[in-house]
Image (tube, rainbow, N blue to C red; front, top):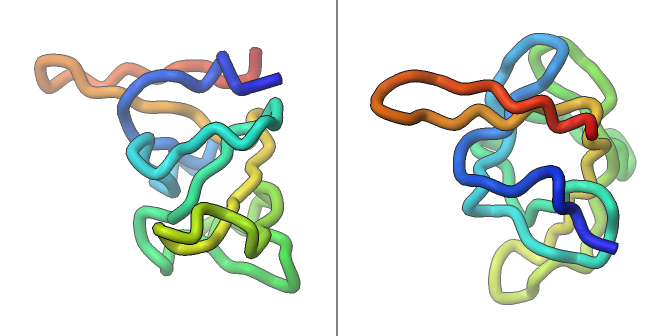
Length: 102
């Protein structure tokens, strides 16, 4: 499968409140059709209840986290619903929002 609609460098923000959540540098291919990350930008960015991941700013449900991510990194696999995040890239100081719900 793969996640071809979420390629590019930048920061993934909550689509509901625009809060920064994940960096593209923490994204990895895990064989799912959802964006998958091994870490968050800041531990205060999210709230985890059981294995459910929520935006800590607006409390939107984002996806789930598992303990089978890259062991050489955090060991976490954040499997995020693509309709809940937007990729924001900066080019020459200008922010570009990319619709990730394709």
